[in-house]
Image (tube, rainbow, N blue to C red):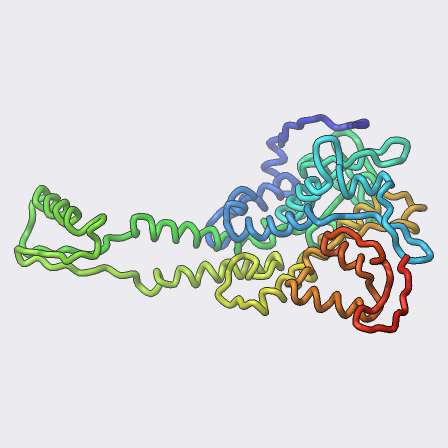
Length: 397
């Protein structure tokens, strides 16, 4: 659909000078992605996403950004009202292009921004009107900044202003170059990866013998092998835990984990907490529930929206406003994410809130039914108080 100025596939290639020149952008990117962390583990996008807590945090953020509805609203004298028929509304809420939904493009761009610091998408326009949004891999885009701070984007051999490129950034100091998890959290992610590997090695085949069978005197290899086979046959497999019989002055000593080995769980929980601090995803949402309760888990879900998710949603609404709306339209239209589903409490709490809104005359019966995905009822659009018998009714338009 529409005109697409970029090639379908671009082969990434760096010259020898770019890879060996410490001042080049390619060298900086290479070092940032492959330099070992303090734990000695090289942290890359693949290795980071293979780490369970990092994968969970990134998936939570990008999944929420991709699934929450983003709608276009028109400002009127009565407030804001949805404007679903505008082309910009369709691109932000439903289909970004012929093969990707709006949510999928947001998910891809946000993933790049989270891990690497910057994510990009191209807004294809015909006669000044947006017709599709196309995800741009990071390596296809070069950013330059004018003296005024305004960015210019180069894709292939074409240059674009900021009204054609959606640029989502992770938090940064100068506002020009986002700092993603692979840089800001390299040491914490490296530690989490190292602890996962250590735990796997520790428990692989128990990492050590289950015990020590001692026999007085020296044994030939064949005799030692025979004793081991007999021991495993009588006390291994399904016979574990049965009574052991030893002869020839043999003795058995059980081997136990030392204090460092037994703290693997605590160490891994600490690593999960570090990932939580980096991404601002509450630790209970990463399934570390050692200090989780029903009360604080619900509050941390609210914290996820307010402290972690809202900055990303604000970045997207700003980007949509800049690229999908003309300067004249920006004073009349605005984008907003619908976050009601994230704020839904349990049934009893919702019912109590609805009852208060009904008694205050803020919501009608049909307003409540719409929030609960129920069909509207005849006569349900009046702002009457169901807890009084005054008979006063006000139609809600």
